[in-house]
Length: 90
Image (cartoon, rainbow, N blue to C red; front, side, top):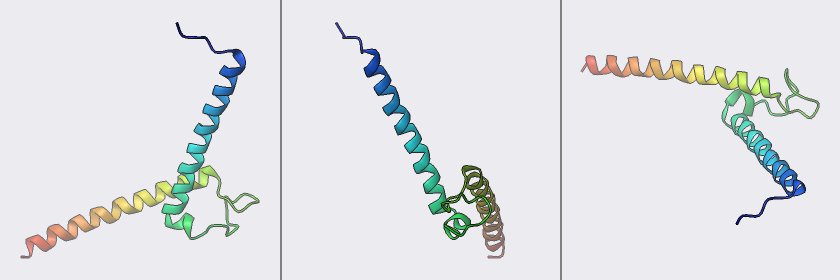
């Protein structure tokens, strides 16, 4: 028969779970900062959206990431057109 957790243990488990969740979110935002050129190149630059510690706000990280994804998508479309045109000219 499984033992029930005490209220203190439940609270402790919940706190630990929430801390892991928050760390995973921080890690994800850091990965975006590392990958997106406009974020990686302006680390600690004190630009718009920087906090006092030089870190970008989550909103800025998400917006710059979206812009970068759009840029990559446009570049991919352009490359597909170039490939198609190159094949047609053969």
